[in-house]
Amino acid sequence: MTAGPWYELPEKSGALGIQLAVGALRLLGRRGSRWLLGMLAAWYVLFHAGVRRASRDYLRRVGVHARLGDVLHHVSTFAQVTADRVFLTRGEMSRFRVQRQGGEELGALHRAGRGALLVLAHLGSWEVLRLDSSVGKLPVNVLVYFENSRGVTDALRRIDPGVEAQLIEIHKGDMSFVFEVEERIRRGEFVGTMGDRVGLDGKAVRVPFLGDEASFPVGPYLLAATLRCPVYLAFGLYEAPDRYHVHYEPFAEVVALPRGPAREPALRELVARYAARLEHHCRAHPDNWFNFYDFWRAA
Image (cartoon, rainbow, N blue to C red):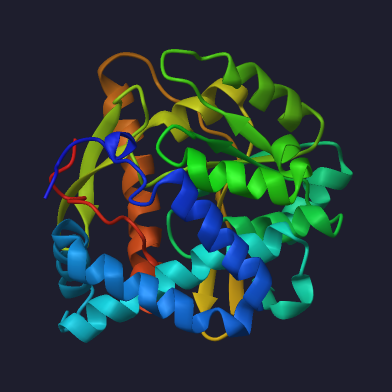
C-alpha cells in the first residue's frame, strides 16, 4: 500500500469510464442505479488490494471486524455518496432527507456580512453542504485540488456549469487562492477546506487519531490566522438509504497564533482538537470515512 501523498493517487477509473458511469446514473436514477454501484464497489474491493487494506485498517481502528463484507459495505457507502454528488449537482434535492444540527451562528454571521472558514473532512459528503447554498441559506464555497480527480469534476461541470462558481481551485506552488478566499469571506460567504489530508505544501503535525498518531495539515489554521475570521467544523454524514445529517460545530472565534517556539504547540493543539472531533464522528458513522490509502503512515 502506498504511503505517499494522497494527491499523487490517480483516479482508478479513466475519464471515459467516469463519463459512462455518470451517464448511467443520470439514465437509471438513484434507485435504479444501486445494482450498478454494488458492482462497481465489488470491482474495487476485488481488484484493488490497496483499497482493501486501507479499509480494513481503518475499520479495525473504529471497532469493526473488517471482514470482506464489512470492507464491501464501506466501499459501497463511498460509491453511493459519490454517486449522490451527481444528483445533488443536478438539483434533485427531493431525493434526500437532510437534517441539520447547528449552523444558526453561521446564518447570523452571513446576515451581518461576515463569513467564516469551514474545516471539512472526507467524511460523508461535503457536497451536501452546498445544499445550504443552493436554497439561499448559506453561500458555501469549497477549496479543491482537481489534479487527482479531474474526471469526476469535469463530469459534474457538464451537468451544472454553475458548480464552478462555488469551487476555488488550488494549484501546486500557487498561493493566489488565498486572495479569493479572503474576498469571499469579506462578502459574508463561507469557504470550506479539508482538514484530514496534508496539503500541497506538506505542512503538517502528527496528533493522536484512532489509537495511533497520524499527520494532519496545519494549512486550515494558518489560513484562519491570516484571515482572522471565525472557524467552524462541518460534516455531512450519510445514513442509508437517503438521509444526510449535516453538523456545524463552532471551533474558534478567531485563530491567533503566537510567534516563535510556542507556534508549533499552538498549531498542534488546534489540529488535535479537530482530530478528536473527526474521531468522534468516525466512531459514530464508521462507514463514512473515505481515505483509501495508508493514512497513518502517509506523510
